[in-house]
Image 1 (cartoon, rainbow, N blue to C red):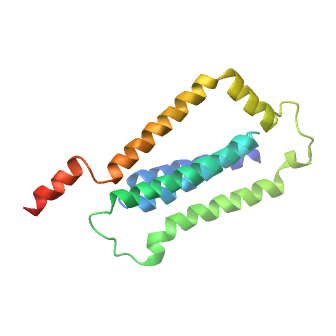
Image 2: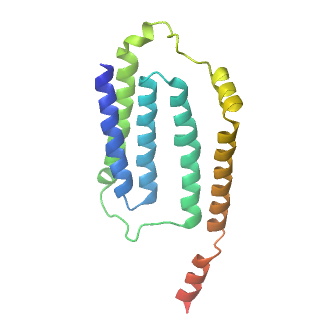
Image 3: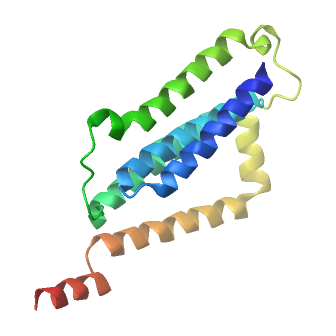
Length: 174
């Protein structure tokens, strides 16, 4: 049963990724990306990594997606033409992906034979994982934090309206 759920989640992740890349509206693309991240989190949980699954939801589907929404709002990204389709045609794929993800989660929790089993010997507590991460790989943690810092500087620069974006607006007014 777990194999079937895994393949369903993999197909949903691929479908959501395709829809994310092909959408012209950036907000719709972000919604599809959130569905993909939830599918990947469920796949991690299915593979026996609940901590990684929780981080996937908290960090990527939560914090990073909120950052993307703010960047889209700062850059004022809108599609060239507004879609004039009916509401259910517009939101149908997103609602369908969300419903399938929810049904998959319910099915996985209800039918999972592993829930009655004792935690396996390979389980690592979050405290031990954090200690290993910051004790063995502090350079990698610092490099990642530096990349996030540079990304924040880039988002600030783009959001404040400076550079070539401002000049192109001034040239368009003439």
